[in-house]
Image (cartoon, rainbow, N blue to C red; front, side, top):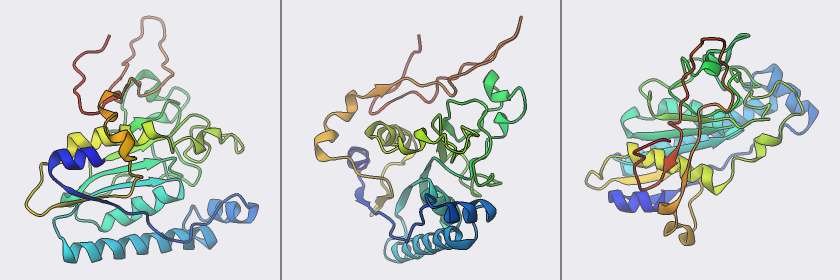
Length: 261
């Protein structure tokens, strides 16, 4: 993000939202979160506090620097906070919203015995990395509409395999994938998307991000990083059938992908 901001002529600041997050590791909190769909009891109150804190921070910055461009990232409970709070942001100032392990995942193409996603069809525009083609609903239900008004094309969802929280697994204790988002490549991946969406700096603009900042030692290396990904890792094809294989989630920061082989 640092290099992108400098390349586009923005000043840059990373802010970690401070709110009393509630862990669902305890059975009582987990049950309350499930029953209330993330909107009630201790878990729901925690989300509400986070939403209000982010809204207040947005209004504070808006008064002093109304042209600020925002890149928002939320993981797990933080995804709920970001997806609700961003509804109060001016859509024109939001560059991107990245959601990781979202308990409110909503992917209609993953429903049914023969999900459309398994044929590479009807994929949601915000589906960045969801390797399990049958993923359709998060553990706390599905946010509908999933994308806030005016932000179509500015959302991205990551849901790893073996992540019960975002719905890639239906087994309660199958959650190994939920702790694997905080890797450098995930944020570089998000940065590669942001670079394509971020306009050149308007006079006096600032870029603010809610995702971790890369270390300075990483900045000179990121132009050499590229990764190939498919929208899903499992495709179904019957006799004489067709399937669409989508490699658009592949990325190369600072470069343009010109060919797939």
